[in-house]
Length: 239
Image (cartoon, rainbow, N blue to C red; front, top):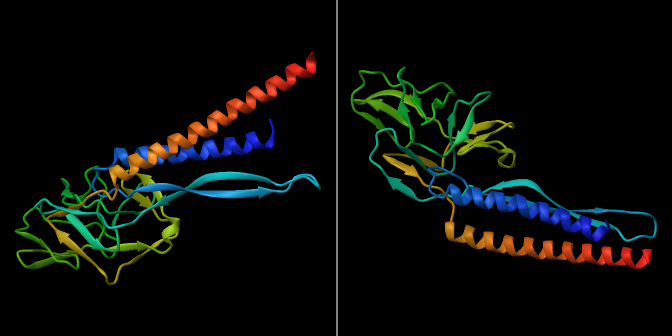
């Protein structure tokens, strides 16, 4: 296989990775707190033998997560929370705390506020947020202070990664932050009775999917023509 074919194959591989990301975005267009993802294409230029032209190869292995604010939906739920501005909620993970913008929480049997799949919400100090069984009317202030009948119970923390480029998409709407996270001091508020929607634009993603499909078909057509050329040349040589 010649250099042109190798270069095209790396491009096709990158397009497939981008197609998977777009398909996942479309599937999560209505998922609360979901962040749109894409891939970043990079070019690697490799020197060949002295006097020969260099070889350019493509790579698309880096995931790009968009953190744009998404529209909010009012639910009226006591433990439905949305962030307006910068920051994430912090929840317990299997190995280390994770960040999320999905703010639909509910009290567990033990009284801890948890996500829909059981991950405990953490407060500003990194401890689980606890709601006593006999607590009265729960109110959550814009700064995250949670109170029952006017008596403070806890302070829900807002966090941001120390290095935004180091966030790793764990599953669905959660992110690992190997580089650590720090509290958000200002510039964000928590709204009780709201949830944040996905920041995916379905129409834009479908348009992008069509572009990727056309680009992939062009690459496939080139590989087929190149295969025919090589077969024809071999048949000519063996005659």
